Length: 311
Image 1 (cartoon, rainbow, N blue to C red):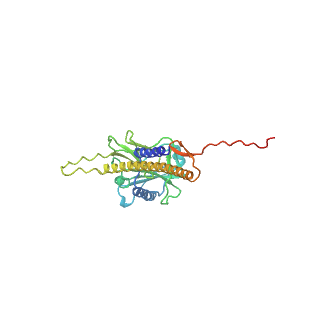
Image 2: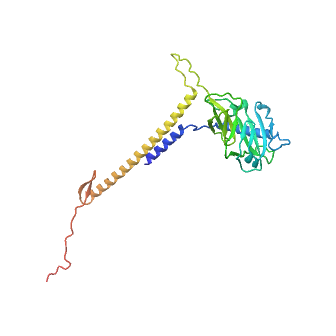
Image 3: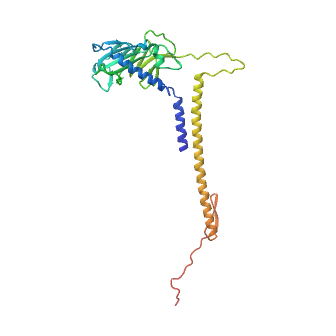
């Protein structure tokens, strides 16, 4: 059962590794760059608050070295956001029932549109962006001059938050992509009107798989070079297959080793018994299973009278 259980675990790992979305995450360097950008844009977005009014969006100015990115801020009451929602905030339509944790009396929603910087901060290999990456992040409004604030957990408890990407040409195979704050990616179908949906804050876009490059003409003396993407997939497959085969070999070797140790101990025990028989009284032998072992002869005790005096 131990061998079968270990094999089942290995097969389960193999199935998970081949499941869609496995390992769908930005690289560590990309996550650090994206989170640093969020911190920077939060600072510049809060600068748009001069005499803020609740429920009114204010456009901010990003750093001069990030031309092409647009930002906006809106201050809201948590209770109002939950009970009324926000019909339209840039590309986002926020329904009622949105919950903010930890609870704050007032919060700020920061809107981001990364424009031509989308592929820099959110590289997505094998896909083409049909719409720029947009983000919606929530922060506390207790101090509008604070910087490097941690994000609140803004989550829809009923209907999802909708993101409408206007001006995007409809393309067959287009999909919505969501990036959460940990860099994990999730793909969904695009609804009519180029609308994506989400239940939590993050960054969003519409993408389509990039067409495979046409193969180069094959020359007689030069074999065609495999594509980088195919090479990566093949290396991944061989790594998984190698791990499974290696695990099976280790399990088989361990099972054979345990079996050999048991047989070795049994032979040693029988050798000790045979040596004891050679030194002591000669005993008859008998066959037990596949082994011939010494046995003692059976002798009945002769009866003796308790009192040998006969009158």
